[in-house]
Image (cartoon, rainbow, N blue to C red):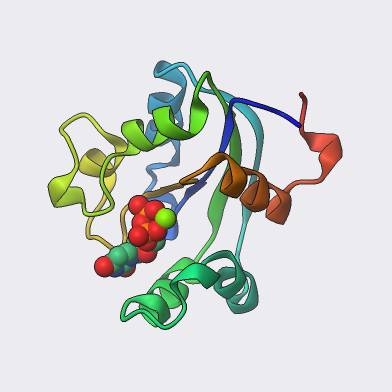
Length: 140
Ligand code: UDP
Ligand code: MG
């Protein structure tokens, strides 16, 4: 299995407002290699399955509506200690609590529309990558 990779999504608000380029630049400047990338529009079923762990929470329905509101960019990113390093680069879920210089602090507009997703564990990086990319697209 591949090590040292994580899975990321540039969320609809960021894509819609032209932040894809600036976010990709920050990702590259911080030493992450983009290994696979695609623009997709999630179906409700896909979004619900991707975020299944949050089903039943107060923000779940709003999150699904938001994540299916327009195209997103899905990516596999390579870096040493990729999951933790990328969570550091994106910052806290709530942009008000994210450190200056993080992607969320820079580009998020709310806790929901927080610009990017990053996997929270290597196991979830595998699970989430498999959602969108076939084995043949992953170079190990
Ligand atoms: N979210 C939200 N309201 C909240 C918490 C989370 O709308 O109070 C959204 C937000 O887009 C977040 C996603 O749900 O990125 C998943 O939540 P999680 O707690 O897993 O945060 P993350 O792992 O993305 O930092
Ligand atoms: Mg999470």
